[in-house]
Length: 479
Image (cartoon, rainbow, N blue to C red; front, side):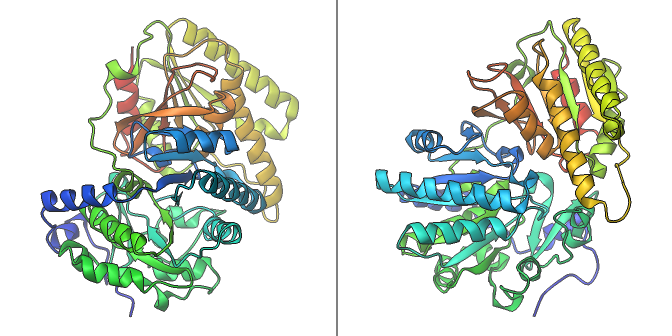
């Protein structure tokens, strides 16, 4: 029987759950487990926001043999590959994941080093699921003699207010825990869904291939009582790529689950992972560090900064409205609806680049934001809308590509926007995650090969933070 709350719970519900275990005991068990886990941990990130909980790890923006070998050679146990697949078609996504899986398996075989793959997906359940993990599974099973027993579902992301309770995934909105299927994210044009119970969600997204009543669930009660024998026994029962739900409202839940997962894997079980960013921090053994300071982020005080706002979720629009109260920022609206008139569209791009360069050179911070009203061509025009959306995305990226003056920093708002700007606009091949400027908001330091080496690049997810968080980040970086 599926367990849900009869009414929308408030944030205080979190205090009514079973008591958390002793943190010192759990941390000691986790350190021991990680020490006994020699696997290279490879995170496939469907947009750049997956590094929002880690620091001191590398992000590779291609998946050539050379890049994957470099990742295996790094001292850190974990590295990220930015696929940006949330901006891909299904066929593009399939090909990319086939290529990555085949290359990872080949490198692993050459080095005789085991690995695990984490498909880092959106904490509000959007993305090419189950396509990505299905393709990874099929390719790896074809390339090796092993098979996968189960798939771990763990969308918990505390920094963004994403919690899983009784197998139901919630999004914290103000002081209310809203089932994910009732949020604006579930209405996504490309990746929409209706279910909030993760078993039902997996059934819905797999068109019934994986029924909800067949899932394995690691309960909060077992996790908080640290019943490792029971948890491991459940994991050992996984077979036929069964779905395994990890309930969590606190990092301690993730830590206990990780200990059990490592014990099960060391006993021979093989899992693929579909998780949000919290799990990568724990399995990667990433310690806690303070939020980044202005001194760590900004060294150039002569040029202005550049803020690029592309995301159209409601939270971004609200944050943009708050940002507009900053008197030290010059705002430029990009009228993307001109994409319907190619000549005017090119003139609009030229106008923005010329204006932005003049202002940044003079020390003025500039915020370029796309017109908030969505371009809607009416019914039966989805394919044309998609083509125009790609042109708009390319145009936003081209503003950075054609920029000649180096800003003191760049903030990119939105997952796909930040990915395109990072890989195409800034030509980053390998970046280092410096840390977070606010909870859930990561910062890259761009590599030597990039357009602006060593640049502070703030990757601001579209669905993270309060109304004032974007403004607070801009104020922190203000020179």
